Length: 68
Image 1 (cartoon, rainbow, N blue to C red):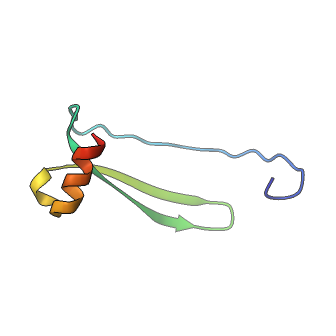
Image 2 (cartoon, one colour; image 1 turned 90 degrees about the horizontal axis):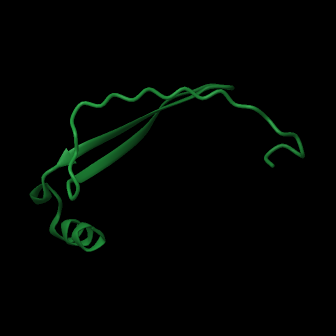
C-alpha cells in the first residue's frame, strides 16, 4: 500500500476516439504525455498512430519485425 494500510478509491474517466481501423501486422507508435497534474488530478494523453515501416530507423524496424 502507498499510504499505510488504508485502501483508497479512485475515479477514472477514459475517452477513446476510433479514427481508423488497424490491421494485423500494422506498425504503430504510441506516445504518452502528461497534460495536467494537480494535488488530486492527473490527466494524460495517449496517442496511437499508424506508421509506415520505412519511417522507422532500420534497426527499430528490424526489431519490430522480429517481435511481430
